[in-house]
Length: 191
Image (tube, rainbow, N blue to C red; front, side, top):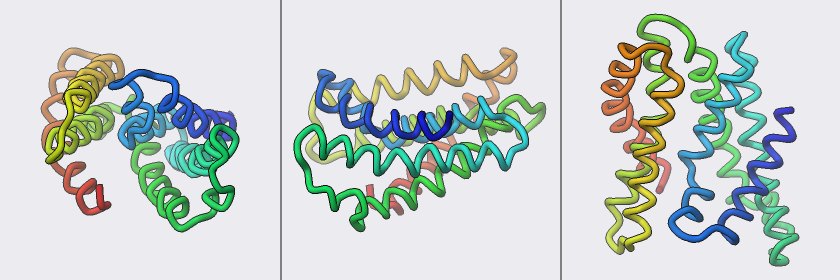
């Protein structure tokens, strides 16, 4: 199932960029949305936590060559893009994000601080990317809409995954400092 989801994620990302109008096309190619997908697969697999992490890594790493294969089929891009340095770079990010967000998905139903931080994480990555988008020097109106949609999605995901009102409030509060860490991570990653 995870392999199929990874192949679909990569193909849907490329197709979404080509088919959807902006600002929705921006979301199709969002690193934060990919991280949320890893969280979702971790939440679905749930336990043990290491299986969630492995599933999320497989999802994200397979999505990268699926993206480039779709580009090959869609617009005749060079097949060597599948194993190019850029592709390997994105797969390494997939490895890291898969571990972090897969484990978060597994812990999202836990009680206490661990569950609250896990629930906050998908919202935080969306908030971090929204800030990154708003910070661009040559920002377009579509960029502002993309950022607003990501913020709304972050709040919505936290609200949907949290089990109680108290956990929702705590996770939203925790998402702010986690977003700052995610923003720093995006900058270190060269975004």
